[in-house]
Image 1 (tube, rainbow, N blue to C red):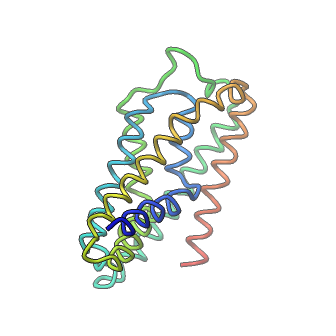
Image 2: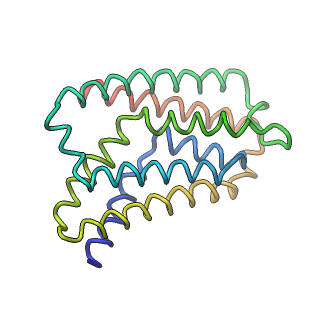
Image 3: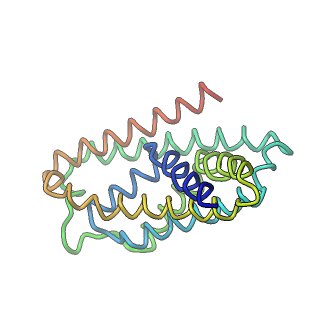
Length: 201
């Protein structure tokens, strides 16, 4: 059971560490210090639901209905292209509007809606949590529950560290120019991920 838990925690971390739209959003909110707790809760909670589905055997659906993977892939391409374009537009407008400032926080409902879209509209989330973690957990039967719970804790610890640790970078991102480069980097990352979905699918 201990081995299953350790592997579940480390496997979840290794999958989540990859830069993506969700992680970039959590980092951005952490730098702005806007609704960080709520964003971390949504990301970790969503992962927990998907990990539970994967460990519970939902990953088998990709084998029963192969078209689901292809549909998620192209939906992900469109989503990543649009989100990347929005980040480039924000960079073109300059960093002043993105500079953390009292009273400039986005409404909680808007932040949570964006976070939910970035999480649930990303096909990589399903591939990593439902399919990959679900299939790996089968190797640790009958301790799949320990594997799944540890994977959930890995997700929670990562998002908490990313969201709350981002504030230590605040002095750097107090400069509007740094925010511009962050937006450009996020936009490029989104388009690279989209290209990866197109050419590796």
